[in-house]
Length: 296
Image (cartoon, rainbow, N blue to C red; front, side, top):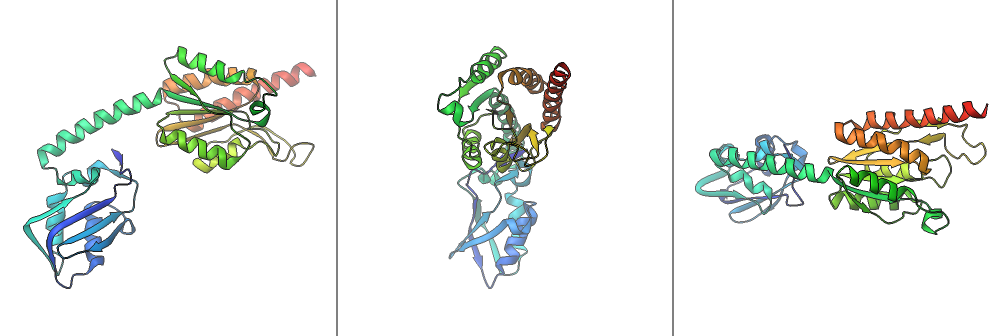
């Protein structure tokens, strides 16, 4: 069960005596006991009777540190130059403080934490925010018909939908707004528009700044540099981070309608980002095939 340390990464070991002790060896013992890579544990301060360590990792499994106080003190007592007494204690201002739990408390707290985490995850999955993109929408040149549609359909399915601001075609700005939405606890983040092959289309690039391994299958490919096409083609994009899904939908309303049905089904069934992206791309390819067939 992964837990976010929420920037509370310091661990204090108090009421111990040091006599020519090797700080690297102390850090090594802590890293081994907590099952962390050696480079993720750093001794940052040494006082008369206290050592401060910093855990250089944002997430850690509960099983790695819950109730590990006695085990860690026993390991430290074997380090040359470290003297442990009955008064020696380990604590933290954050959830790392759960290292001090006894065996019975550990089982109870872990079970309660697991239940709370599942409840929070369930609630987060129902929180949606929609970001329209593009200068033509922001300047009121064209009407945003996508956001009302997405809101209506998703709220009908029990989601709580918020409307984000209209985003400019800037990958850093898009990434920043998505990152803020993630921090605000949205489980589904949807953008509309900006997935095309023109130089102004930057939504996919913005999402890749958040999730470099986002699924980005092509809907259609072009010869780069021909006409208005500055990129190789039009891509759908589905990213995921921290349990939250990031989905870049097209701009045309009829295409959003097609994608929305697939997205809602995927959210119900827990489809992976890769499978979802491929389903969206294939549905949009089929629409193009039908269009070209009708023309010819």
